[in-house]
Image (tube, rainbow, N blue to C red; front, top):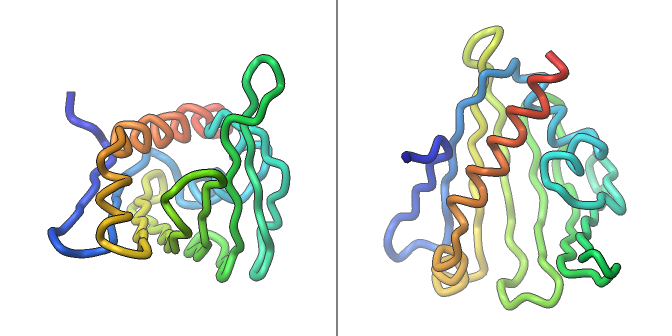
Length: 155
């Protein structure tokens, strides 16, 4: 089955461009990235901190059934323009991927549809390729499917 989220990875580049169209108004799509409670739902993680503003920081963590942290990520918002754009850093703790810069552009297609374009820049071509060796595209597409499901309930 073809994934709805498209990942474009050009050879010999240290970035990715990811696109996905949603059956959601741009305001609801943006809210999925702005509201900490909603972020936690579609990411299936605990949102420890989520300061939705320029220079605000964020932190997510996921624990196993015994309470051990199995995933922790954090970063800083460098731009936060409602319904238009988010620029943030993303760093997974205890992982060898390094810090990445993410530029998320939110575009209104119609009153009821929108498009998300994510430009992710890695420290090096090698770091980007390391990420692509994982089931990255499938996981991202699944997360975007969850955004659609969670936000459909708020329509």
